Length: 228
Length: 250
Figure 1 (spheres, each protein chain N blue to C red):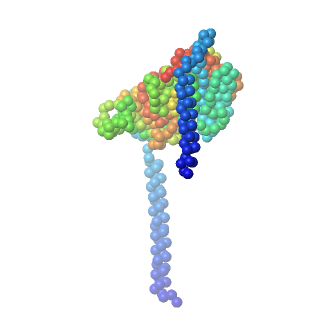
Figure 2: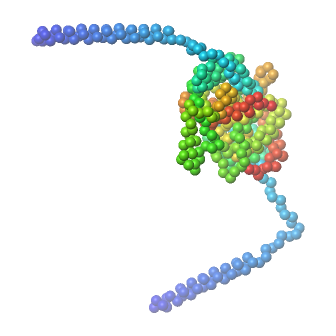
Figure 3: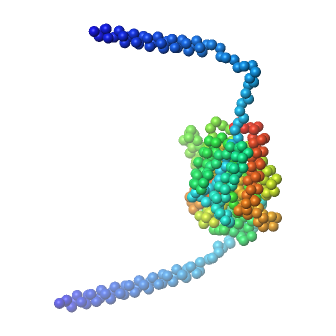
């Protein structure tokens, strides 16, 4: 025979469990509603607070393996990294347009980030026989904030862009050179460019163009309009 | 008794030493004899001409299909072009070395190794693409440097860039003469940048008219034959003239 007080306790505990379960369920519903409301009110386009400025784009053309200079007006932030990303985003938007002479899907979202770092002088790069001090100076030049010398731009592309890029020697070379040339045209201190894909080094863009090396902006200048 | 056994062995050793000494004297006397002179009628033979070797690198292969063309993968097109070129060049007495003869995976460094061991006078990396028009000729974008005894693997082509540009010029003339559209450019290509030979990457695209309409597709047999003939003509011209002037360089 179960004592009466134990029966009452069991009923109270069962009722408390059911009550807490209902309470939790209701809170979950509320949280879900709050999330949906927040998503609906999120801005779909970034506010254009920055003033519109002119940017020089080196636009590739597959038909004659050339790059033509195009001036575009677009809002550009003051931060150099964000500025470089916005300019390259505009360039890739042009390539994603239906009538593009250098068609690549993806558009502005294909640029993950652009980082500007003090450039390592390739002519005086450290060798195995360099002194430890010279190695340290070469590998860790002045801090970015104090740097006024040449800069290295590290362009982080998305894997979706690379996967969708047409494979071909000419088209890949033009993409790389137009990115290098556009960066140098708008940020003259950028003299070297390196590429990453989703933050990782990658051998080639789409099977051809070498992404392991450091590109010099001067290479894009010589390629501009270079066709027979 | 031991002394009576030692005597014959001592004699044998002495005899052997005497024989060796006599043979040595004979050899030294023979060496001092004047060498027989060549007959005055025999003219000095000119040095044999350096052999002319062409390296054909059919890009991609095996696990790496390359780009996707309309009816085939890039690796199939490049292999077919390589085989066709090899036949045409061999028929004209040119020695050909290829990086692959079947649908096999060949590492980029291995391709450069094959080229460098072949001591080729012309290295062609064959590619294909649906973008652009005609033939795209690319030379390494490495800045030219003076040849040195040792060079870095990834920039070995730098000492040959000038010669590669000359080879690209010869190919450009021949392809233009065959009526093709040709574009020239510089690029960074992993295998080519490590080659120690005049090296050009050739990318074949469909032939297009002024209105960008395709006039000859990549699977057009006539178009393929025209491309192969033009490249063969260019290599024959390269063999007959330009390369001999600096064949020993660098």
